[in-house]
Length: 115
Image (tube, rainbow, N blue to C red):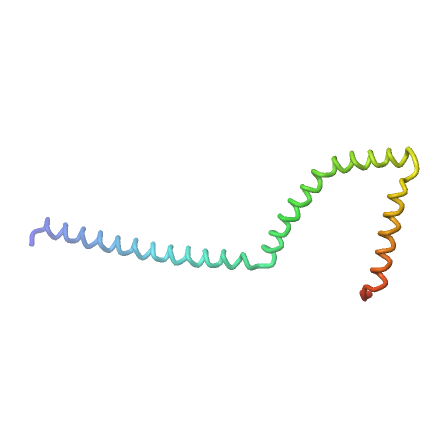
């Protein structure tokens, strides 16, 4: 075998060894990525992640409630002006008395909570 052929065979063998080492490293990288993915999926079951999800929901509810404050203030001011003008209508007084009686009846039959 000539020197030129020996050099080419050596280069080919080295290239194959390098490709094999690269393939092994890629396999290790893929295994590590798979383990990291499994850990990230397991993090979703942690109580803190669940609490953060509830917090996001609560924040959106609070934002919606804050957005509703201005219309409620307008209605409250209008109701205050009506009340300021004169006594309450009989229907409102009667409705209040009915609701008060219903609440008293409910409390009479509702079980007591122990603190």
